[in-house]
Length: 162
Image 1 (tube, one colour):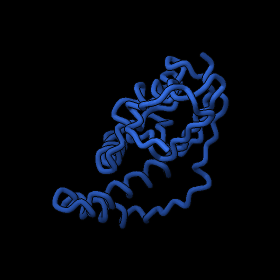
Image 2 (tube, rainbow, N blue to C red):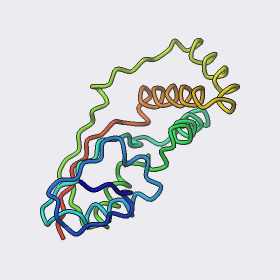
Image 3 (cartoon, rainbow, N blue to C red):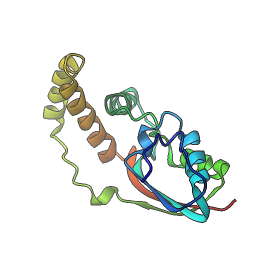
Image 4 (cartoon, rainbow, N blue to C red):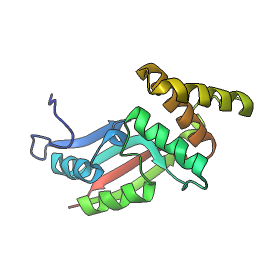
């Protein structure tokens, strides 16, 4: 077993499969993470990512704010558009094999509009004070982004081609 930062893997190509479940979004440098995964895989090896991706640009300031609250609160700077992740993987030497939107398998808990607004405002006031409140606020923002179709929970499979 190897324990390492996925931005700096200390190994030669020896793995057939690398799996990143809800980890890739935490990358501060997605391109570097993909390059390191490529370096660790044997030719034909597969990289499987299961994580949140942006599938629709924000259409207004409120949506942009929700996305920002989610990214900052959960510390997920690597949540980026799916096409950007695919392009970065290609630059790293991967070919896309499949994607599958798993969002429909999630149990989203949408609050009624009035209650959601009150909860959002209350959490905004205390989220800078307590990490738990910040986490709850970010969770609410993620739920809203998923429900509004801005974010999707995707399974992405890449194959090392070079």
